[in-house]
Length: 102
Image 1 (cartoon, rainbow, N blue to C red):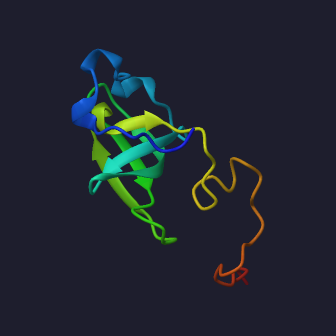
Image 2: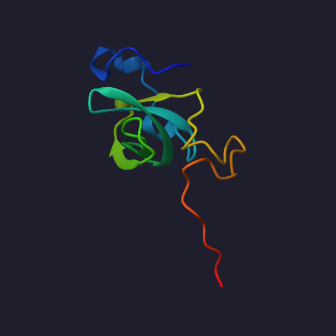
């Protein structure tokens, strides 16, 4: 499922899943900066959800806590956020070298 084409203001509040229905590691779309970004749930309460998301096409991530109106379930895999979930644990081109503890 590609990114939603609506804004949170366009949604019927009755159609928004409650914040506490999300679970850690759930893939979601996060509405930030007037666009939908791929994200992953870190934790949720009855009022809000903390997510890690990619605020653009870069490899960097951001963390934010927001209400459920700014989230939608995501099915499309994200090559950065979903690596372990989809078995993409091996290094990707451009990954920094990993040092072993001595």
